[in-house]
Amino acid sequence: MILFEGLNSVGSLIQPCWVFPEMSSESEIQSRPNGLSRSGWVMLGSLLLITVAYRLLASHYDFLGNTAPLMAIAFGGALLMGSRFWFVPVLLLVVSDLVLGFWHGQGGIGGYTLMSMTFYLIVGWIGGRAGQREKIWPMMWFGTLSCSVLFYVFANTYSWMMWPGYEKSLAGWWQSQTIGVPGINPPAWMFLRNALIADSIWCALAGLMFFAEKRFSRASEDLVVESA
Image (cartoon, rainbow, N blue to C red):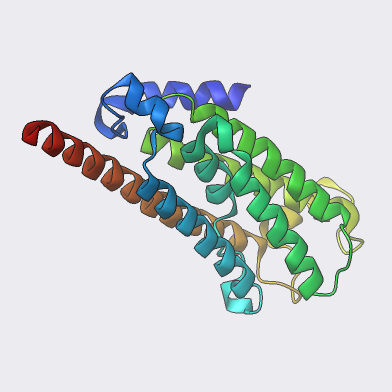
C-alpha cells in the first residue's frame, strides 16, 4: 500500500507539532473506543451527519456543485473512528449516494455509483488503518486531499470511457480532466477546486474538534486526580 506507507512517512516527519493528544493511560484508552470520550463521539458523529445532510441539500443547487467533502468524510472520518468503526463514514456516503440517485431519478445502482462505492470502501479502509497509529492532523489533511485528487481522476476517467460526448483518445481524456464538455457543466477543474476546498474545511473543523475534545478530556482528568 504505497499511499498508506507515504502517509506514515509524512506523519513521522511532522508528528511532534501536530499529534492529537492521546489518553494518559492504557486502561483509559481501552475503556474508550478509539480513545474518544462520549462527547468526542457525539461531536464526530454530528459533524459526519451534518456534512452528509449538506451533500444532499447541495445537490439541489447548481452553484454548490461538488462542495461536499466526500473524501474528508471517507478518509478523515475513518481515520478518526479507527479500524473498528472505519465503515461508518463509508456507509453514510453510500446511503447518501442511493438517496441522491432516487431524488434525481437515476433509479437503481448504476456503474458510476458502483465505482464511487468501491472507491469509498478502499479510502475508508486505508483511513481506518491509518487511524491505528497516532492521529496526526497533517496526515488526515494530506491523505484526504490525495484521495480527493485520485477520486477526481478516476471519476472523470470513468465519464470519459462511458460518455459518448468524449472523443476516445488521449486528447478526449485530457478534456475530461480539465474543461469537461463545454456548455453542459462548469469546467471539470472547478469540481476539483471545490472538492479540495471543502475537504480542507472539513479537516480543519474535525481537527479542531478532536484536538479540543482531547485537551478538555485530559484537563478534566487532571482536575479529578488533583481533587482526589
